[in-house]
Image (cartoon, rainbow over all chains, first blue to last red; front, side, top):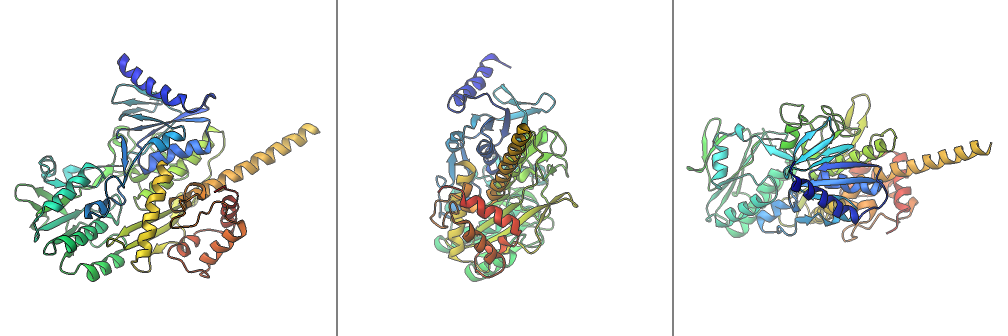
Length: 416
Length: 97
């Protein structure tokens, strides 16, 4: 490690430390990734035991929410609406270090940073989100580098770029959204996006089309509610095709290659298959299908690496559990509770959690799916509680208001 | 004798504190819509923090048993036992707004 790099890390940490606690700490927890999982975990460990030091490592200056980002594509919301800085987390005494974790040494219990510094931990939380398996789609990397093909499946610069492409597209154009095989981040997300782009076209360029090419045989979430909205609101605008898996993309001819045919479009929004984020792969946390990280659902501790807890979309999902912001926030609370117990010499107890996912189908109307997940000792996992959960009775503006309430509230609960 | 009594008191205090911690953790699942420790911004939903214990418990049971119509709570309440509902109601009642 270079001396100046060490000083950078040490300086950042002591600076943050001054503002927090003078008492000697019980232990240090390091959290990698400041999304719905990591930020929530960092905040809640401090809320539940302020004698534990928490360091949050995040490479970006701001959190940008994937939920509600589809409304930005339609022009119904802005990047500013869906962005939050980390000052709220820091107010809880979390030491926020803007850097990227590049390696984990589980034997030494330390994390190496891109800047060259190292941070030791008693317990490590890895909440890395997703990265893509670009190799599953022939030509994707070249197409992405050209800037003509976007996934916009991580909210941020690609969200802005996709909005610009939609605005620049002439009326009468075709927007193609290619959906990967499940499991992927946010099961209803593609169908919400298709609805939002269709709503924008209906208002601004009504001769245009939305074509959904879904690798899955059918809509994977809230299918009845989405299809009802599409036939009521966007007839002649939105076309859905199941069993239409993209295997390649060519930005020169602006076409998506399916298994049996090529389909041309004017805006190509191709979402590649995912896996757990890069740091999970580098740290040997991926256990399943080269993609996901299996965890003990009582503690979120990795089944591969002791002392490391994995949260959010990167996990090998429990049965009937979606990869969602609500779930990542709840995973964080399981991990925070377990880590506070472990660092206080107590036995962790399983925690019951709740998922709620809203999707907009028009500017003001939304639909919802909810579930309650409880530890099952016999099966050794979290299971949906029989009889609980379900979807909205119908799309409504009331659900739209609750969707906005959910967004404001979960942003505050995770980062405020 | 005194020492034994003191140890027993301390143990029961510790158990009580642990039960409160568990209730707070259980309630944290509600926070995605109702706010951290039930302190919402109050724009769409009334804050659960400081809501009377008996009222919260009765409403959760009414949602669960289909007595009170709802957009979502009738589906979520069905995932909670009587014991969990009572722990949540006691926790929220004890929070300041």
